[in-house]
Every structure is written in structure tokens, then in C-alpha cells.
Amino acid sequence: MRAGGGFGLGLSFFLIVVVLVPFGVGPQSALLTVIAPGILWLGALLACLLSLDRILALDWEDGSLDLLATSPLPMEGIVSVKALAHWVTTGLPLVAAAPVLGLLLNLSEPGYKWLIISLFLGTPALSVIGTFGAALTVGLKRGGLLLSLLVLPLYVPTLIFGAEVARRGAEGLDATTPLLMLAGITCGTIALLPFASAAVLRVNLR
Amino acid sequence: MMLQVSDLTIARGGIPVLEGVRFTLAPGQALVVRGPNGIGKTTLLRTIAGLQPPVSGRIDVPPESLVYAGHADGIKATLSVNENLKFWAEVFGQKDYSKAIEVFNLGPLATRPAGALSAGQKRRLGLARLLVTGRAIWVLDEPTVSLDTDAVAMFAHAVRGHLATGGMALMATHIDLGLGEAQVLDVAAFKAKPLADNDFDGAFL
Image (cartoon, rainbow over the protein chains, first blue to last red):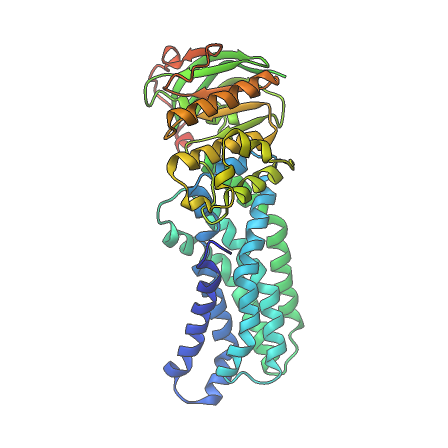
């Protein structure tokens, strides 16, 4: 947190995207209501993406990653804690800010609850997948572009089901099925990806 | 507790750099690794620390007994000297880090952000980390870079104290630490013969 920048970056990007969309779309509140869940989810996802290269790059540069790798802590634990830290500093503020920004996009009234639920369930997956991407690209100078390209396709299922939950919720439909899928994706990534991240990190440290 | 390296071949980027490396380190002993630049000293130390696998040969070392210190100190610039040491002490399950502060004379700097330290002071903090780990075998890569003569003496004193309590130290260094009892291993003698490497994937893994 004291390292600065990481906390506000994602949040301000989210704010900028959501504030600018109504200007771009024009003053049609009916249209905004329709696209609001998708825009909010897309904004949150891109905001998450923006801060991914900070997860491991700083530790790589100052040598702490080598030292942590030779410490008694298991690598899987290190990457899990890194993902958790990323979620707390990036995902959680996005969840908190989303309802306020939903107001700007004329989100329909039942949609708020589902927007918060879907972001709360979906953003941990974004952080865990992002940590995997960061582990893959950790030794590369300016690996940000490669990181985004690697991570974007992995983000697609979360985006589809997350935005679907928010959309169905906003239209007053039953959102159980996409919600279960979203929860399944999140649980699956949290359970499996730390092992993959730890494995690629070990290879990258050689 | 012993560090025993037998017939070790190590590679950098898929190309063998040293082969047939063998030595034994018993409690209370120090071994200084010497050799020209690029011979593979860092690769040897990283292999022994477990950061990369050896090509062949054995490294016999009790589990959880090594601590590695590389070229970078692993210091968080925004945390204070105290907080940096406290973090590493907790990582290694230790509580007390006052001895490390005392040995490397970091007391006057304890509350300063590590980012505001000079290069030599940062190095001293990086070396003080070794004392808070409570590990017996120190594997040090160029520990004396950017240290002044006083700080080098401080470091030599710390190593001697560590050896006296049954610890071991394996270090790559070019300067004389005044550790008369340390053995010297010149790795130039183990330089690997260039050979055609068929393990194409190895260069990428």
C-alpha cells in the first residue's frame, strides 16, 4: 500500500471509463440502462488488468522474489497471498465503487444488488488469473503487453458470466445459472491456478 | 549437519558452465569461491540454494538449513530498516532481530525508510537479514559489494561469529575478508568443456 500508485490506479481508471461512456453514447437513458451492466463489468475488468504487472515485477527487481523462493514459505502460498493482496487493493475498491458509478449509467434499480454480488464473486478470479499471468511474464522487461495478451482470453469466461449475472439481475430475470457458473470459475481458479503460478515462477527464477 | 557437493555439473541457459565440482563444508567452516567473471560462480551458488536444478551430480544438504543472499538485497524501499528486518524474521519464523541491528550497527538508521539509505547501508541491511533467519548455512554472492572497509570488518566479524556457533558460510567474493581460516575454491579448474547440447528444450526451461 505504501508503495503507492497501485491502489488508486485501477479505481481511477474504472471511474474514467464509466464517467466517459455516457458522453460517448449520448443522452439516451434507456440505452444506458441496457448497456450499464456490461460497461461496468468491462470497466472493472480493464481496471484489474491495468495493475497486474505490479504484482510480482517489483519483487523481481529488488531481488525479494529470489529470497522468498529460498525461504521456508511455500511458493503456492506466496502467489496466493500476492493474488489476495491484489484483490484487496484493486478488486474490493472496484466492488465498492461500482454501485456509485452504476448511478451514472442509469442502472435499473434491481440491478445494484446483482452487480455487487457478481463483481464480488468474479473479481477474485480476475486477481488469481492475473497473478498467473504476472508469474509467466515476471522476468521480462516491459512484459506488460505480453501479460495483457496472455491474460485477456483467460478473462473472457469470467466476463461473460459476470456481465450475464448483472444483466439478468438488472432486467429482473432469474440469475441463478450464470451466478453458479461464475462462482464455479472463481472457486476453480482459486483452487488450481496457484499451483500453476508457483510452477511457472520456479521456472522463471532459474 | 553438513553441506556436501559431489560431481556437480551446472548449466546457464542450457550450456554447461562448470562440471565435476566437489567440496564439503562442515560446521564452523567457510569456503570462498573464486574465479574470473562469467565462470559460473553465481550459477553455482544459485544451484546450491535450490533456485535452479543441477544438470548432474548431488548436493547433500539438510532441508531448511540454507539461506541465500544474491546481488540484490531484497529490500523494500518504502519500509523502514526495522520493518524490513521484522518481515524477514517473520518469514523465517524468528522473533528477535535486535542482534542483527547491533552487529551491523544499524541502530541509528533503524527508523529510516530503506529507500533513503546509501548503497553501502542497504548492503549492510541485506547482510543483517542473514542473522535474523536463524539458518546454519549462508550462501552469499558477492557480499561485500559497495561496503567500505569498516563495514567489511563488520561483515567479517559477523561471519566469524556465525562460524563460532557452528554455522557455515559459502561465498563468492573477490576481496580478502581477512578470514584466515577460510578455504578457497578456485572454480576455474572445473570449467566445463564446450559440448554440443542436444537438449534443445533445455534452453527454454
